Image (cartoon, rainbow, N blue to C red; front, side):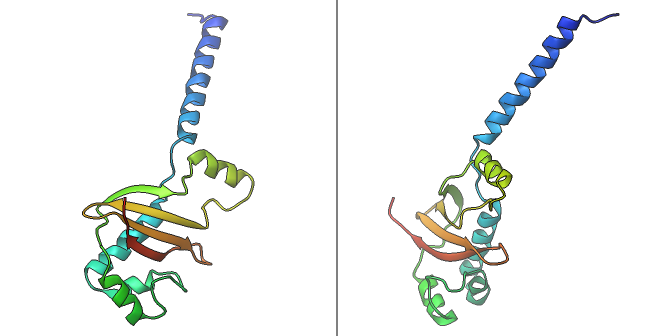
Length: 145
């Protein structure tokens, strides 16, 4: 059975249109920094377990929570530690923006990001990347809505 050229063209154009629509949708989706969220959750788990030395290892050096382990421990003991629901990352970045940065040969991630969590309190964890491109906690604090 011979398929008409116009039918093949219609099928090809339909596939192309679907692929372009899917690509456009993907490019507009928010990138939520999964590696940074993972590190921040590990950090908060160490704090909840009162394993302050392990949590301190996940902080940026220098950080905004204390110059040594004792200062950091005092800071951590007075803050909310509820990171149940990841809510938002700022500054916002889309997959398309990351693709554009990659094509231009620039770093994909922002230098500093804020991760907001909701639960029994509103919690913000500010993170930056170290020289090895690993996410580290710069500071964290509960905040008003």
